[in-house]
Length: 143
Image (cartoon, rainbow, N blue to C red; front, side):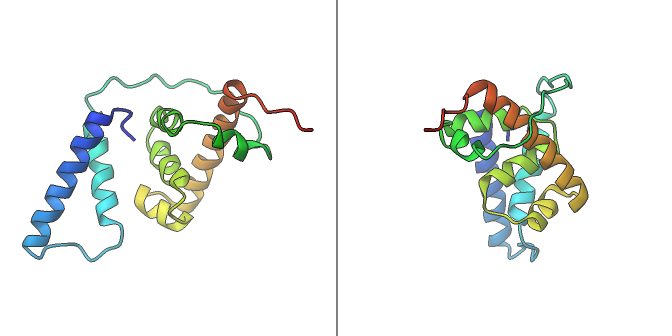
């Protein structure tokens, strides 16, 4: 989410340290995903002082049947870099979507979005990602 592994480790350690302190004082929240939400807010705070990319029009392509095989050819770092360049809250939605650990309601809750807004952000991001995949990893010819 940060696009910087040093900052990500710093946020991770700070979040875990805070969680340990809360646990020691028996002050852990009872809501699901509070730790993810806390980490997300820390990431957002960490990026406030960073240079922000100017909004640009990104090319879009319809998602193809070969998208899965194209994604499999990516290095995990390439996907992380692409997602980290997305504007917030789309960045959070895409990161959680591609983790493939949460359902749509959980992603909406973590990203603090309505389901309709989450759907719009994911659809747009996936079409933009497909255009990037097509430019970066051309489809392999079928035999």
